[in-house]
Length: 112
Length: 110
Image 1 (cartoon, rainbow over the protein chains, first blue to last red):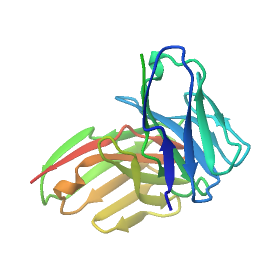
Image 2: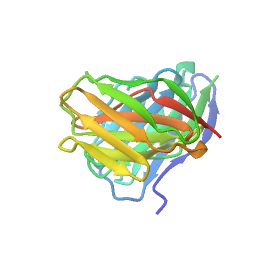
Image 3: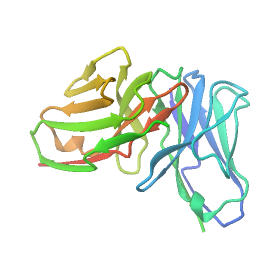
Image 4: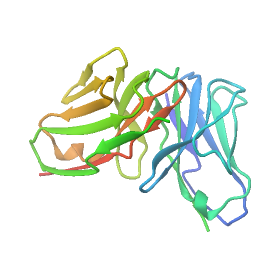
């Protein structure tokens, strides 16, 4: 099993460009999450999904959109990137909320 | 809103020492408390998960305890090794999501 994978690993964008981050898991997990990690701020939840076709806002959802069309995939979109979105983005999944979360390796995004 | 605090923010110890990392949370209505390890430039790896009905969990040289009533959890690392050097994060589980602390950066020197 590959666990949780994220693509791409690194990306540099210019302000105003758009992009989509892809998260995939092969563990048949119901819950999937997108976090961002910034120095001094810790991990903050952007959006999450409790099952295929569902999404919900987390702590810092502004400027991001998500979709969960397939159970194994969770996409994070930036429609118009801003320098404040420079961060490391992590995807995670869990079977249900009371189970441990498994994390992907992260995507390092820089917005110039 | 749940808030999770980890003390200390950084810790440096010589190899072989036993050490304790602290985690406190403001809302005791949690489903579980999880401890993670993060190596530089890497993702998070789950170390221990303590369900709300449990008091502690052990894995090898790691022991995590949970006191819901006081809003505290501790991670005990026995006989520390240089390979234990990493950032350790705790996270409190609510109904659907985890709230993370900012972590304790641990350096174990040979």
